[in-house]
Length: 527
Image (tube, rainbow, N blue to C red; front, side):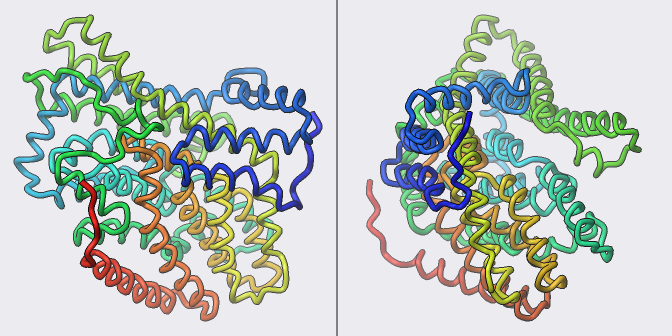
């Protein structure tokens, strides 16, 4: 099918902007994404409604079938979501969730401790952002609920530890992908001072957004820096309610499962399935990566395995292993098979809302790709800008691109090569700062985007209303971006990592002071 070329037209921005604007204005995610999908479809087919219908059918079919077979990536992610819903439901039925909450309450004595538990788990489980958000959410939620932490605060903790940790960790799905892209850029421009891994490690302290987003999570938790919409959610949670959990877009994901918990459960009933989930997922990632290396006649290496792993299938196998252990732990209590079967259905059904949103997000992502919105945005950076401004400009442009397209990985794929070309054409010494700026900007834009799959899965992991999560996280994400902007400005003009870090730290301290001041200001709280 011949599609209209919008690679050099600002019209390519209309569908994502419509979807984002409507989502913020109406808080109806599916309606907003649907309108963006329809607009993008008719633009691409030049308002031919017959062609538009055929194109949209192809897009929807492509979510499940690709290259003459099943779309294994999408189906694996959807399968993992269903399995995780089943595991979570079984953890409640077996009493493991209640037992773990009681155990944690005897050791975690405060609301701050409950939030720190979630934050530390988010830091330590870094193999993949999807896995991080969903698994950490499942473990942390009973504890944060017990101490009246809002689901919005939990979603913020999940989202702001998942991608920031993955993007600065070599032994993660993100790190392996980024190292591969960086390696090709270094080869293309004849840079031999670094290996791909060496360049990635050198870039870690330059990824200001990831570093300061993580630090900000712990500052917000420790000093209870609740501002903007987050303040209202925390106030309502303190009173015993979870404001926003019954929004139209989250009816299935956010309501309590209504499962009668066993009083015979133990901490092992929760810990054993989660440990199996983690171990099996990591093991499957190494196994599938190792198979890919062997197929290419390459020797096995840890980094190589993560670089070539099949994340989707690994999550699926990990989910199946976790579910098997959950069934064993539940079955040993003598719970009726009919109750277990009912619980499995309830758990699977609890994920249907999230799956629907994710399918819509994938659809609009495909349409935005065909509109070549990213290519249009990347063309805006070409010009006569001074080389010193390029790191901060690339940071902001990558943020806009990730926000509009809902994908940080897609932004990496488009913007990293452009950053490499710009560095080679202006100042090769700024190669790594420019690449770091793209990584940082992509994560920031992804954090702010309602159509980002990682944002959707963070709200799913916390069982929080999706738009509620976006609205409450936005002020903190913008704060981290301001700190990053200062860092990249100084880095571009001084080419000194030390000076740029010092400037960013000073900006971060000022940000925390500003949040403290906002926290103390009187605010009208509803309820």
